[in-house]
Image (spheres, rainbow, N blue to C red):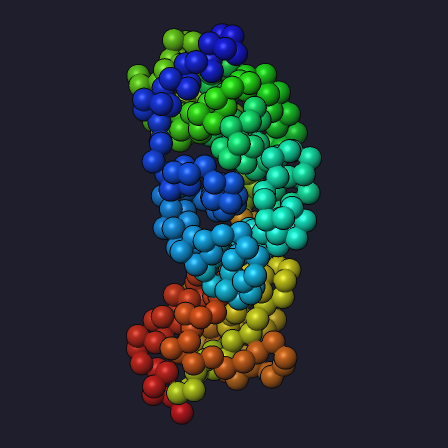
Length: 334
């Protein structure tokens, strides 16, 4: 199939059947595209939509985001996970305001200099914000190409990425790339799904090599992942009518710069209040929460229960504290 024929097929389908009413598509505003693309990294569209809408209510412009405090940014991001994206988005806004007169640049070379913007995001911004001929490759595109061309490459092996980028660059049209790029993503997300793909509804069914070879369920190939280890974590709960002692975590490691129950290296000689589990990309956390007074340091402070919404908290810690508040422990402790 020629690049022109593929582009015509995908853009025609996208116009008629694709997703055309997502919040960040309404104006094709470069700032909106930047926010949505960083939020969409490793996160599904349906999860991102309410966060995106709240974000624009609080930070309607890139200048508003650039001038916000880190606490404000992290508080609004909490629950979305992968918090480094929030810090990158904040830093990106500050760089754009400082170095590009608040205008997100169009060129790939300049976009690559902005924090948090890698090859995919460069292509996405250029395609969706400026309708420029820029290739995009993400999990949806890899899966679609792997089936369409019956590719033998494992899609979760980074050394194979170059094959998918070469295909994307070959088929990216010189015009109307905004719709073509969105069509690739829409086909992967809604038709060429990981499980139970809707091949009967696919506009590429007649030329899909995996379908012709009976290999749709065997593709794409994936490298077997290693088992995720489990690590214990020990957290201290010091609660009174004056609030809860929290510490701000360092800029590196898990939950960077968020406020959290103080963590210690070993289990203290104290009463166990509860346990929780949380899965990160590389390990599972088996959290133990102990009723104990943490050692005082410059990173801890007692925060009133009614002010917890004003600080950024990791999702599992926020859930625990909400349970604590619901039990009225804050009012009972001395």
